[in-house]
Image 1 (tube, helix red, strand yellow):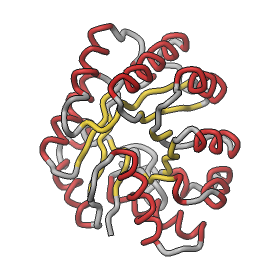
Image 2: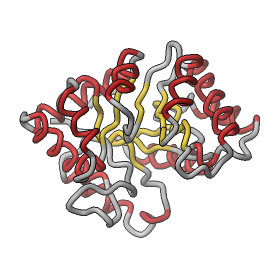
Image 3: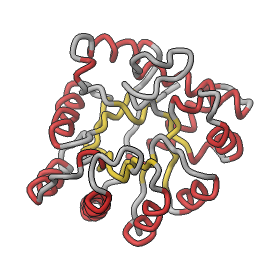
Length: 256
């Protein structure tokens, strides 16, 4: 059975000493592949380089809201150029983060909108980061997101917001936070909505699932997310694997 981790950051420095071993552990756990996600220009370049080394590692290129300040026209031109690379499957991660506010909110919104336009121009899905910015995020998506699809990763919104995103053709990225005891809202969403709307992710090295919370995350732990979804929906883990892999295949057009 194929299983993909739809959101990893294996290019980050915390993997420099054992990146190959981390990737091999994921494959040993039965993962078929993963998508390495860019967060700025340098990490996007590293993501492409990593994807070129492994047949079933793909990547996304984009500017995270934390890094939005200082973005220039040349950056958008480079992102556009990168979308012609065979392993680049999406623009991301892009979006809004009002929790940390590392970049001014008006700048975040401008850079998000520009990258939505870029995704439309290049016919790529988007991978979206959204934290504590539900209102502005949905307003922008309603105005600027027509015809786009993709993943809202590490989903943290309401059931109503989830339903609107689904109607717009988006998948919800479900990660390690689902295993946390205080994630009651997300557990309800996962329990009630059909599997055809979910993909699974780790967001490694962040958001490590229980029982490894507090340690560095890695793609092999995506199985813990799968097991939590299966327990909530009272189905076998193979059903979660099959459904989430099918969703990624439909979104990105690749086959396991």
